[in-house]
Structure formats: structure tokens, C-alpha cells
Image (cartoon, rainbow, N blue to C red):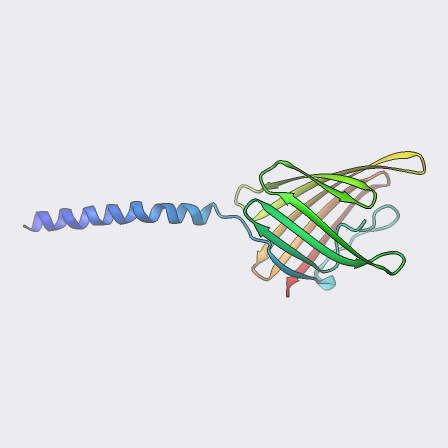
Length: 175
């Protein structure tokens, strides 16, 4: 009788382990969720040399709202334009490694978003080609989004421009 009881306990333990395994694996494979309203934190940011040609180009800085659902990250920003007017931008990125196309004031940008192996950061590589004063120009921007905590986000950006490489690290706090 003692042997049967021991076998029942062992069987129950093994069954519980198999039932809990998918939950543990799912928790390890989960991805960061960047959803929320984010406020730019200038004190924690490293803006680097944003000299000629290296400015924000409307791609970073300032407050924004991110919505992440299923396989899509939507980023909405409101900022002041050069003439003082309010400029609203919306960018959408698929989170499956497929190319996303967004329309900007200067034309289209093409982006690819890929997750880190641990799912804690997202790298978005954006290429934009346009013509200015009869000259073809291309910019490549790499953003690495890292959720430091549920209330803290860092976006490290590297921009390759005709005037050289510009690196920044923008810090955001969840509102």
C-alpha cells in the first residue's frame, strides 16, 4: 500500500511538472511590451553631437504614445514644426522581421524590426532615400528599444547620414 501511495505521488508530481512547463516556457519567450504614453526625460538622455545633418529629423525625442498589439507596434508623436505648427506623425512597424513602409514628409521610409534573443529589446532599422536640391540622399537609422522597467524606456539611436554618424540615447518615463 505504501508503494502505491508513493507511485501516485510521483505520478502526480510528474503530471504537474508537465502542466506547468508550457507556462514557464511561455514566460521565458515573452517579448517586451512598449505600449503606453512616454514622456521624454532630457536629464537621463545622451543627445550627443546633433550638429548639421544630425538633428532629430522628426524620428526621436519628445513625448509619444506606443501601442503594441499582436504583431504591430504603432508610434504616434506630436511635435512643433519649423513654422510653429503642430505636426502629428504615426509610424507602424511589423514585429515579425518583415519590412514596414511609412510615409514621411520627405517620402517613404522602409523599416525592419527584429527582437533580441531574450525578447527584451527591439531593433528597428529604417532606410530613407530622398532628393534635396537635385542631390540623392540616403539615411539609415538604427533604433534599439529597451524596456529597463515597466516605467522606463531607452531608445539608443545610430544615424548614418551624408555628414557622418550620429548617436543618441533617449530616455523616457511612462506617464
